Image (cartoon, rainbow, N blue to C red; front, side):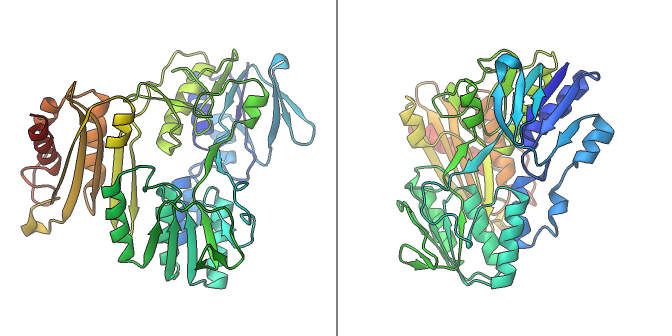
Length: 435
């Protein structure tokens, strides 16, 4: 029995490792079009900033490790160009065909450059692969640019802004085509982030769709370097040509067992949909944590097990210039669009006692008025953001009601949190509004 996996980063190698644990005799082949596998892509902005010393530090395992320790063959520099499922074959660039009994598609996602004229210019970069990060850092060190433009105010865009500042870029403008940051249409969040970035000489322009990049400017902003951090698209062309069904989001439709519509073919990671536990329908959530979990389930089932991936609530976190931003579930606007009756409690409170160096933290809770169930939340602050947003995410996943959330036994000690945690203060605020 041979398992072939297309894609050798988060989802693909998670699938390979899990399949090997379940079936020691299974022949496993991973096909990766790039030169690197099993690397921490989320660390690439920090490599550019100089906080990670080398790209090698971001590599978790090498192809040699998988061959030697796991008996998994990983072929890098090997693009798959077609899937012929009736023959159970994957066609490779160069004319070679690889047979499979089971197949996992983990082709990831990419930044779409085709919609922007000039996006292939030598001063335009993305932050998706180690080689792209290496090129950008080398360019910054060689050219020492002073003005930069970033397209996209999502996680990568905000991290890229901090990375460029770390390399001495003094003037940075972020263009965002939508009305808000981090994929949210929340005026309060956008304004909070805008004011914070301005203190570091980073300008944020929302509702600014860019169609062209000039050699020395974007719109009216002079620049010497451009980072593309918008227009992410799932890599589904290979799957679609093989008649693997796509969902409404444009990513590959899968079951909770990561099965596609083709027998014996699974999909996982940034190329596939995941069930959103709040919306109750498939969504496209391209995050590393999601990709790893989906990959494990795909690999297990491809090896003969019966495992399921329940879904996600869309939890994410980013830090830009010292400010942490954690989001989970739905925003007020998203909740209303999904048919909920959202009531929002948003408060600002110290993240720990003021006498112990407490700093302001903003907490937002979104509660459905009909069911009194938590459906979303946000935490913004300098410290403690990860812990608090994870509490909200766990509560949403557990379908916790507001009354239950208010009674959570949260830790208190002056070095970490006040006696009344900001989460509980926000919950009290929501309760007052509902009542």
